[in-house]
Image (tube, rainbow, N blue to C red):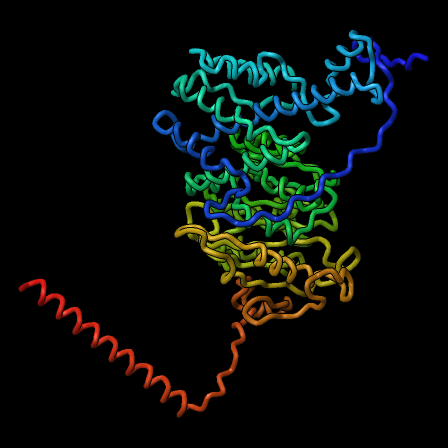
Length: 564
């Protein structure tokens, strides 16, 4: 009995496929250990990857490496996904036990060219002249740069969702043919051919490795598009985004979205929206999401002056905005702008610093019950500038400041200046999943946390992240619930965390520096009597003096011998 037939959009028919159970969700990746460059460590060929990028030196400014290397990596990813799915379909069409089985070559051809069969697994049908195999074949051609530009243009023309993602800039660059063909050959290695279904994992990690190193080499400029991974992990661990909408109005390369999806164990229960003001960085973000198998609505524009999501309300706002922007255009903010309203108070922006208007922007975009967590300059905790102090007081008095975390220095690329994390919340009234805490603020002093991985760079360890995040979760939760936490009770830890009342904050002139509230770390009492302790220290000092004298005498003798 012949199989039932079904028409495609083109009018051709092929066998109806029985509804199959959804694929089991892949197990979450284990936490990655920290490495010295701050990048993802489990890529065995990472040194070769970086050296290949560095070979561009002399032809391309270091700050532009990423705009040539990362799009090529993305193109490789698109081809890999297409090739994998094409192979799967070919095998299924020949397998008599498969729902796809057919001996009709026309039907088989129709299945293999049906875009829906690829989109259902997050793949695209890549046009012949944009396929990696085509580029490899022509890698030694003098016009390989032109062929690359044509491939980018062809993909964007074919798929509207890729528009604005792929740059056409290779032919107009200073890259030599050897540079371009070298990069094509690098990404053609078998190392990139992960097991079927794991392309996003492998290439996503390679992408993160590159973008981390690019940020590191660019110093302060690197911080404009990339937030260090340990800081992102901490923000997300504290926010716990499991379902709902995540919004980042300063999304850079999209790291907040990727980490949120990892935290949610790739459940598909999160939606992502973001805005970015730099078009080249916008491309990095869109590519990053697609490489990790994610979809997101990322718009180009200045979030403060041209909000592309004016009507959006999110469950989570997670961001690392540019600090201390002056002359940013405060005079262009209308007096009736809804973002100026903080509870029952109306606040005013100042053109000398955009920090507090960023906070107003985050708060405005919060859904009822939502929470905003973001990186901010330390100065925002204590500024006495009239408009800024009044806005800080409004956030405190209206009961929206949930937690402040003071971070250690040297966490951010290109600067040793320390920063802090702020958490504003609309779920402090006790009517949702968390306890009532409108009259409290949790202060965490994490300045002693982190490990120096080189002379200039510090990272927060997984242990640090767990401890800080646990303190925040204990503070928010109803006593006795969610017993899986490392500890069950809310408690102050001298020198680390303290739950302060709003009256205490007002008494300190609305200053929000955690060190004011957490006190000093408890130390073990030394019960040794003074007389005994003094005798021990005196003996130790005399021994050190004797050792010093002996060393001086030895040095003098050796100098005398040299002059004889």
